[in-house]
Length: 260
Image (cartoon, rainbow, N blue to C red; front, side):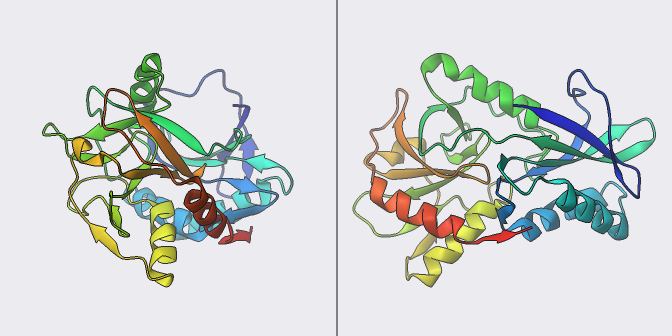
């Protein structure tokens, strides 16, 4: 993924030289997809980032200025996957922006249960990104492109880089992971649940074991891809798929996009 790294000086974004992302220095991060200058729920991504960044001493006025510069910096044409960060540096918590070309859209995904839960700060996006990338890479040898995270008893929590929505077999309800389980508060999930409620779909918080997914339709959701339809869980339960429903909801999700 092509990347240019910028650091915020308080007034401007300045490109900085780097050979490799500094390992272990990301305190907070957030990202979203941009297509020809439009993104879904960007203000909510900024709010989530702000809440975590202010816990590290960043003030609200600096964050507002940073967001303004980032919005101006994102190219108005093409597909992009910008990332904003609070990095730990010798000068203290520092705001950075990574200008990244977005990978191609994907509509399906193959899953595998990760061997461990590597998260150390499951409510904050950023500190565990490297460990989660390693978890996802570890299931690649099994032919999977996303790792599921579960508790020791097999309770489904989230994906390494995604949230999980489930349409259980023989129901018309949409099930989400209960709020008492520690996981990143998903912006994409919130948008999709808004669509569900506006169209009369019942939304339930329900504890699900991975083994409970037999004949269920499983959506893997993220701000990068929207909805990907899980077609298989390696060595796991068989899944049902409804590509037409996925495509309809994907369109509804992207219809929420607004100009930057």
